[in-house]
Length: 162
Image (cartoon, rainbow, N blue to C red; front, side):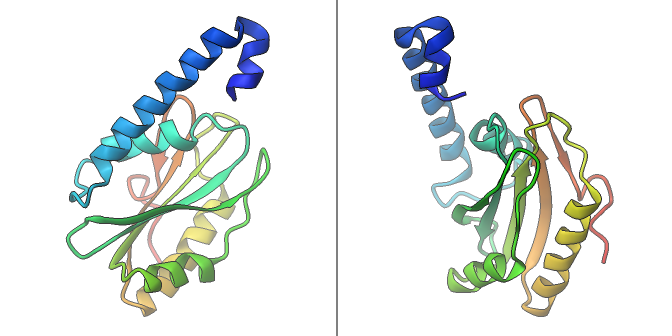
């Protein structure tokens, strides 16, 4: 919740303190997945994504671009949607991957509803991006869906088969 909205319920000073704390937590988690370090700790990655987009009231589609050593090249929100949907264009996902020389990507988005279960549309879109990425020799490692309370991984659920 934005600090200005939270201030209505708990007062501006406390709301600002909570916002500052959230910003520090996000920065600390981002440092653990960036700084050109190899990303091998998927729990830390999921925690970072949950902190960055898990509490939003609208859907955000984010892509993490990595080099061949799993080092983070870029982390971008490609599009923002509504409370229950976000439009994703595979062309935008993959053109950025080509521009930054990514060898692999991780897709991520949030479900403001709190249900981390992937929808049929989520699975379909992931497989479409995977098919196109395969033609460009770009690996799609996972598609992580985050909520306030948790996350799900399409890879772990066995939904990333072409």
